[in-house]
Image 1 (tube, rainbow, N blue to C red):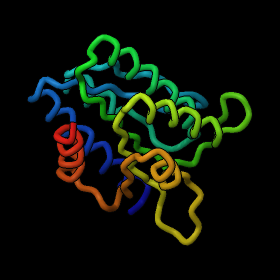
Image 2: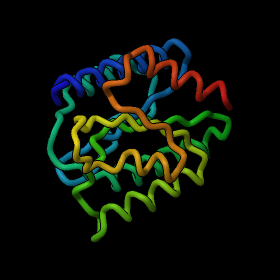
Image 3: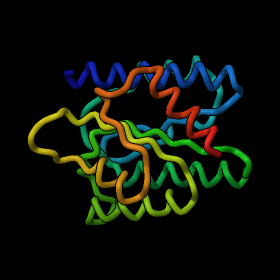
Length: 174
């Protein structure tokens, strides 16, 4: 599956999640990679239209400031959990998990430090790896999942319905 097809499949799955969230009065937020940093592009909302528009305009490729994305995600969930402690937080990360932008110096350590905080906070994390299958693995998605107990899937393994089922099962477990 080519990079564009993998990202289109991921975007389709997220749109399905938005529709499901709207029907159940749940909220979804979005953090995207922008150049050399991560940016909150959609604060928690149940607006399908806004989420869909942002997803369609979301560029693919470029740098992967993964540590910054995990840190910003932690901050967003931390704020939301303080306001609504009874929510079931589920974070979905769609990436090739090849961090190449550091906040300070060591981007892999920064990713692991941020993931440790996320795990300690009790945030449910689903990692969807878009790295193409090959003999040489560069991304650290599997290692992150194994180290912190996050769910891990290759994009090729997933359909829209499967992603919805994974999220529903996480919610049921809590």
